[in-house]
Amino acid sequence: MVDYSETELGKETSYSDQYDATLLQPIARCKARQHSQNGDLPFVGCDVWTAFEVSWLNNAGLPQVAIGEFSFPCTSDSIIESKSFKLYLNSIIQTSFDAKQAVVELLTKDLSAACGAPVDVVLYELAEYAGFCAISEPQGTCLDQRPVIIDSYHPDSNLLVANVEHHVTETLYSHLLKTNCPVTDQPDWASVYITYSGPKVDADGLLKYIVSYRQHQDFHEQCVEQIFNDIMLRCNPSELSVYARYMRRGGLDINPFRSTSRATPPALRHVRQ
Image (cartoon, one colour):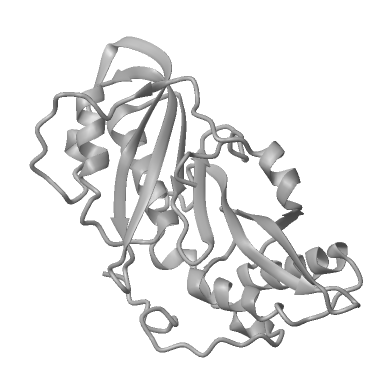
């Protein structure tokens, strides 16, 4: 188990409404990341965070609200510990800004400095977000009603099997992914979408593999990277994308995307989000 005792997770917290960029706590990706043998990452991608509780004051003291979307490249030195991100966003609640763009510029500067790579920040008006990111599902096959027997609740890559005689391009997905915070053991719920080209993956085995994470402890980002790496190793696809849409906690959801070919995920928002 990786030691994350330096974070604020599971500790008594004081909430500040005074701007403080030092509240952000980076966690080095290398603490848990799996690298290929030559040290290069076997994927591209990003972590898309959605913040539903972003607020500040205009120059007249009137509160402003927005929905924030933050895209952290998977090549950044660090992830941001989620509780610290929430505390940081809370710290601008009583801060006055001339315009929304000034908030965007401040968030971009602070988050990029904390994670060690440029972060893309967008603040949406509420009506704008409702039209931009509609609830939808991809064209693909949901695995969740398959008649499988589950007997493992810890990740088991041996459950992944592919038919090398039958090559396909398809999207398979499940709403049954559950993992646990590595510090507090709180449950994290997600839908996971797997798009690949190559030997046909056994659907029953893939569903059992996804469910096998049910008692696994790790951060969202690392869980998705482990799923990506296991599928690549066991099924040998020529192309692969893994996208998990996690449910929000404390007004934040985290949506890691890893792919062999594209750096940004498809536009997607699950009904539980």
